[in-house]
Length: 304
Ligand SMILES: C[S@@+](CC[C@H](N)C(=O)[O-])C[C@H]1O[C@@H](n2cnc3c(N)ncnc32)[C@H](O)[C@@H]1O
Image (cartoon, rainbow, N blue to C red; front, top):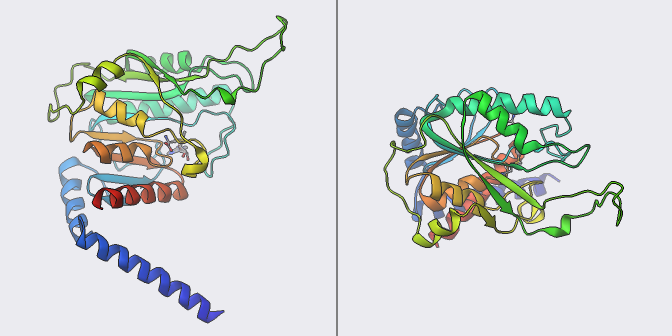
């Protein structure tokens, strides 16, 4: 038994050493990383407490959006996120079965925190369901829009995300009868909000969106497929395409992007691809690790 354990530890250790060597020979070293972290903490007012992982301009905090004290007010250019939908998803560290009233209070509280973190010309792309059918019909998008306005956000627009996934359809209500049929729109929305001023004046003012992307994405119906839970290993990942579009459309190169419900790290992968600084907050350690691994994989692919 002891020999097997020692062997496993040795294998693990040499795998880590190889990984470090590879990185040193490739793009960056941990030492460089630490120096950069110190510099960034000073420059961008990011406190290192509960930092789960940091590399280059990406940070993962294993923390709770309600209590995190690592971010300064008015430090974020753009928030892109998808909160829990309260539809009985089996998350590791979050109860997704609140009453609807409790869910709306939960929403109000984290929206207040996000409002404080945004710069005055900061924007917010919020991916939520249009409505809810499980456990009683609810006008989720309309209710959250109302709460966001009460918190202080200004409304800009709503993007319809057509996930092109009609196979999800299972509930018909009364089949072929007008008695009590269900109407379900197989779409989600991305609510676009801003703090004070829609015109963005802070940041590099450098945009990296192409003419084709701009023309296509400013049409508020987006068509691309959802992400596979199985492939990613998280119960509700969104595709990287979603944060990528929001980031290129609504922020400048080198801006700071926040995802307060990081999940599997999709928003940080989009930041990596678009040369933005990315900060992710995730309450569950295993999901933080998943995000970290996805980032390391993506970086390896960039390096080779
Ligand atoms: C809808 S998922 C986000 C999925 C993500 N967009 C992705 O692509 O993987 C919501 C995430 O929020 C996390 N979460 C729930 N409550 C939280 C809290 N109070 N603070 C931070 N994260 C939380 C859950 O663990 C879950 O991973």
